[in-house]
Structures are given as C-alpha cells and as structure tokens.
Length: 232
Image (cartoon, rainbow, N blue to C red; front, side):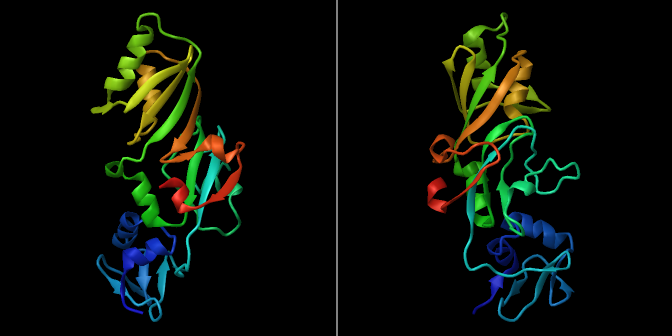
C-alpha cells in the first residue's frame, strides 16, 4: 500500500474531517510510531502506528451513515457531563459523529457518520446543501405583520457584526413558516425571530440535502441506517 496523507488517514478512519485532523495534528495530540506528528506528514497504514490522545487509530474498510431524530432537550454533542448529549442514543463503541448541529431547544433530522470527507462535503457552505426547517410560533408581532416577518427572514438582521438571513421562507400555516438555509450560524433562526419579537414554540429540521425526515418515519431519539447516496 502506498503512503497516504495523515489528515486523510484520520478522516477515512472516522476520527474527524480532514480540517479537524489538521487542528488535532497542530495541537500535538497525534503521534506516528510514538513521535509527535506534524502537518503534512504521510504514513503507510500497513507499517506505521498512529494514535490520537494515546488511542490507536485503525483504518476502516467501510464507512457508516445514519439518520437520527434529535429530540428537543438534547444537545448535538458526543460528550456531556449532564447526560444531555446524543451518545446514549448511539451504538456502543461507535465512532459516529454529528454532521453540523441542532441547538438544544430544536429537534429533527441530524446526520451521523464516521466519514470525515462526507461530513465536510455536506456541511461546507460552498457546496450549497440545503437544510429545511419547520418553524412554529405562538404570537405574531403586530408592528411587523406577515409581510414584515417574511422580509426580515429573507433580508436578515445584524447580530455581532454579521448578517443573519435565510435563503428562502414562506408561510405554510397561520403560525408556521418553512425556512430554507444552506449556511447555518449559531441559533440563526432564533436570533432572527427574536429581533422582531417572534416567539418560537417549535423548530424542526425536516430535510438535509435530499433526505426528508418524513420519509424516514423516525420518532424522537430513533436512529436509522442510511446510505451516502440517500443524502447527497
């Protein structure tokens, strides 16, 4: 077997994406045959022994892909001292990690995988993989009105020096919006809604790329194995 770049090896082994692998290497936690690795190193998987934080990394022969219905009240993290992370829903000893995030108060479709390159392709804004959300609210600000709500989401609001906006938005019921974005910022939809006094009662991610939550027939907390082609 020919040599392979270390960041690619870590990605294909399900440790993380290549970008994150470079961060780990730069942080000094990756070793090759007991020596601290450097950015740009290559290895021969048949000969070299690679560790991350002292744990051996073994190359996978195939990758796994899962759809998960993240319940409300659970954070999109593998480790959490309060027991609010997603690890308890995953197979024991799995190397799955979430592609992107849903905030604690949101629910819906979350893709899990051990394929770092797939995660980067799905999550990087330049690839324009759309995510669809169903947003329900309990009250409508009288000073803004229906058209004002649409306009605010579409053209955005300033928050910490950035413009928070969506790609497309429409009313699907009296107190329900369907929102489409391809680049997610932290609590993006909640920030926009909060700027106009829109109180969100429920926020569900219903679609990621070409995968629909409704077709999976998942309930909150359930996990279903899928293929890469189901998403991309």
